[in-house]
Length: 216
Length: 216
Image (cartoon, rainbow over all chains, first blue to last red):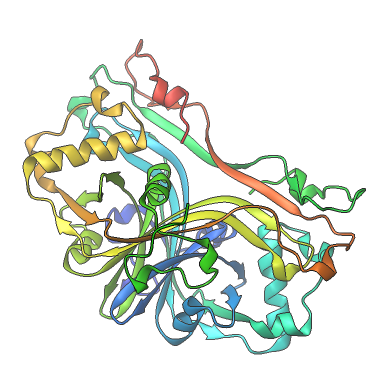
C-alpha cells in the first residue's frame, strides 16, 4: 500500500516514518471519507487554523465561502496546509508511555487557485454538496446568479500530499507484556442520529434516504 | 452565554459574529469534550497543520511527544494556533446556498512554554491520559525516568481563545420556505464500539468500565 515516494521532503512523514503513505488511492480514500478539513494559513507571521467543509474532485480539493471570507482571502494569496483527520480509536497500552491513537490523516500543501470559470464554480458546488450527502444536489434549489457571485471558490491541487495512518493493537515493551493491566483498542466512529426536519417543513415531504440512512 | 469580550482582535470571530463566544466556560467545555487538536505552526513561511492529542488543566493546554518531534520543536519556538472542532450535524437547507454544518470549535493563539519541572511534567501525563479515558492513570504502568526524559511536554496558556458555535435548523430565505424540498439537520456524534483486547492480553483481566462504556 505504501509503495510510492513523497512528492517532496515537505510532506514526507518524519515521526514514525512507517506510518507514511504517498499513494493517491490511500490519500483519496481518507479525503473522501472526511467531512471537515483544518486549513492553516499565515497572517503577519501568525498561523491560523480554521475548520471548513471541503470536497475532492479528481486531483483537486475545493473550498468555498462568502466572498469577504478572511480565510479564503488569505488562502488565495499564500501557501496553505490542509489537514483532514479521521480518529479511528484509542490505544490503551500497559504503560502510559505507549498509549496512542489509531487514526488516518492527510496533509496537503500548496497555494490555492481562485475558481472564476462559471461552469467549474457550479460543478464545485455540486461536488461540495454531494460530498456531504450523496444525491442532495438533485433535490435542493440550485444556486442563482447572485448566490454564485457572492460565493468564492478556491481549488487546491493534490500535488504535494501525504497520509499518515496508525492501525492495530498497542505496542507494549516486552517487559510490560505480563503486567496485570488491561490493554487494547477502543474503536471510535462517527454515526448519524435520525434526521430532525426543519420546524416549518411543508407537510408530506418524505425524508430522503441520504438523510434517514446517513453514513460515511 | 456569549457575554464576555474577546481577549484580542485576533481571536474575534469575523464571519458570523453572532456565532462567537469568549466565555471560558463555553471554551473549556469544547476543549474537554474534544480528543484531537489541529496545531498550526510555520516553518520557512509555510504553515503546517498536524493533528495531536491534548488535554486541558485549568488555564493551560498540554501537548506531548517525542523529544525529537518536529512539531513540538517548532511549537516551542514560535506562535501557534490550536484548533479543536466538534462536528455536531449537517444542515440541509432548501437551497444549496444555505447548506451549512452545526459545529463547536475553539481557536487558541499563543506561544507555548516548555515544561521542564518534573512534577508538572508528571501531572501533565496524568491529565493527558485521563482526558482520553478518565481513570486510566490509576491502572497502567507509570512513566519511568527514561520515558519522562524522552517525552517533551509543552504548555499553551488559554489567554487568547475564542469559540465558534452553530446550532439549530437550516435558515432558508423566506422565498424558499415553500419549496417541496426536504430540509433539516442530520445529527452526528462520535461513538465507541466494544473494546478490542490486545492479542496477547493476560487471561482473566477484566475490561475496565472506561473502556467498555466509553463515551465523550
